[in-house]
View 1 (cartoon, rainbow, N blue to C red):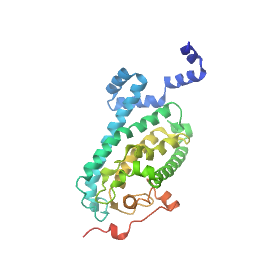
View 2 (tube, one colour):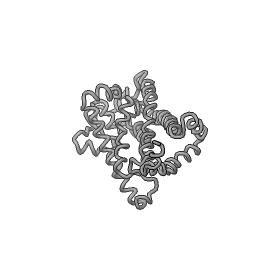
View 3 (cartoon, rainbow, N blue to C red):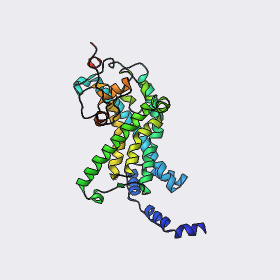
View 4 (spheres, helix red, strand yellow):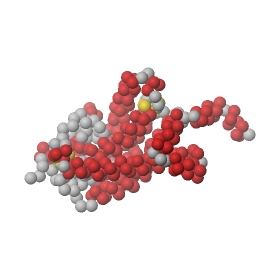
Amino acid sequence: LPLTRWRRDPRSQAMAEMLAYNEFREFNRFLNGLIGLNGVASWAEEEYGPELGYYLTLYIRNLVSATIIYYTMGIVWSWMVERSEMVFGMEVFKGGEVKRPGSIQDQMILAQMSLFLYAGLPVFDEFLIEYGCTKVYMSMSEVGGFVPYVFYTIVYFLLVEVGIYWVHRKLHTNEFLYKYIHKLHHKYNTPDYLSPWASIAFNPIDGILQACPYTIVMCFWPCHYITHFVMLFLTAIWATNIHDTLVGDTEPLMGSKYHTVHHTHYNCNYGQYLVLCDYMWGTLRQPAKDKTEKTQ
């Protein structure tokens, strides 16, 4: 009887019809096949059922891809930082030419442990999208073409930027949040203790909190499906860049020049990609010249 009632409920029928063919889910199944995960998907769905198995496959895909991105970017970016004057035309912060023994290994361990939770956020996003809880769309034609897509994407990016600024700032100004969540990342507080490997070396709750504006904003503002996930994964690549302790003028971008000062002074430069929010709310701080001059 309860099952009969459920089937007759128009809302339940609408949900069943939506899940019967879901363009987002079909895209993920196509992508899983493209990268050779059909075997994993079949095993997961056989062991845990079609719904849980599907999301488990997405989690495994996210975890593996995020791990590959982290180690690839760490190796490549570290190699380039060692040759920064030739590659970027930049020098490192004074004192950051040689890294503290054991610091990179510490960052790798913390980042790898946190990745197990980080990989769950895109899965949660996927769940919200597939169940119609967001404003995410698959095709540009759904919002009127390329020009509206660009407009919506720029506004989405700026809203996320503002959200991350305030989350990050609150992680510093709230004593409880800083002490028990964010302080772990700020043990890397000198140029010789910072490196590209510190990019995602956070308490995992910290990393989720700073990424959650991507999820929150898509619930009320239109965002292109693939663009959303590309932006989410690009944060890991950008984080590699801003922890490399290089000194260079990147304005209006919040480059490593600014983020290194954030790690040494704590109460400034909270932005993710842009200096805009710090400039607007009075928390932008330039590095002192004597701290950026290369040690002779």
